[in-house]
Length: 468
Image 1 (cartoon, one colour):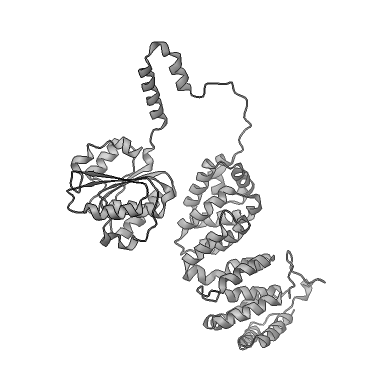
Image 2 (spheres, rainbow, N blue to C red):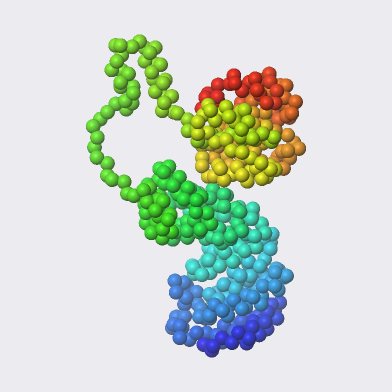
């Protein structure tokens, strides 16, 4: 292989680009360049790429990089010809020509309807790891950046629970987006990969390492929380097994955070049989000292203790002109110690940005939203229904002028209670009720004789029962 003279290589690649519209001539000159830079010291008798079934010229990567640089502009300006040339390069069947084919796919607009069929077919055909990586990263460059919704739809198809064989593709396709420092789409990515991490098939160990390390670099706190949540709640024994196997590849701090959850559980030892419910057993022992009514009352109190609410999972969202020092906020904080009562300022969008880090990726939230806070709670619940156990709205500002940008939200089945006064002169009852009945399929509407602030009603409500 001759030493690479960058000036000469640039001239060769530029001349190759001149034949972009003449596929036969292009392929002829491409073969000449690839042969010219062959590294003969690495050529084998079979001349097949390691771990692959593709023949290879053993051309240095710098040569392909220069060719790609020369083709980039002309390919983006002429996507029809780029697609045609990509097909020819792919059919050539060499490692280098297929890498160039994958590069050209990444220059084609994501709206091109023939793009995804090519990508799907080629990823199914290829075994070479370098070509597969190029198809799942380089070929999706424009789709990731220009049409993220389309990109996420593709990833959801790859990560569908019934298509385990394509999970690896979905993970590898996500890695460049996760690595993008400007990426703001981590929440939907966490939602998509959580079931895959929990399933933790042993065949995906290397992919899971890549995924978890990339997520940790992008957001260490959220990644740590996600893994702890999965390991603490999963019923799948394979989750901990796979995580123990791959944890040595995690960043040291993450290994430390997960150490207790990944520690192998000791074998259980036989235990003497005990009554299934100790409280019930004690109650029966003193049956001669108590009446049946007293026993029933004791059982109810025992059950209440077992089902004690976690106040740290209750959050109150105040109204537009209010603060976390309002009357409702203070009464909630006194009645339910540990309850979250944050303060919000700014526009609706700014308040939602303040809210999301507070709720994070935790589940089983009970959200109470008053007026404008009701709008905030509604939008969050419709966008993240799996995180919300119950939604309580107090005279929510679900007005069409405020709510217009969100009218296309999908209905949710989260249990929802709306308390609204007939004398509300700020947020009229009927328009709100009309919208609410479309959004919430599990809705209880409580109409009271009160104004917008619900001052009379608030103290009369049984909040323990409402929040159960």
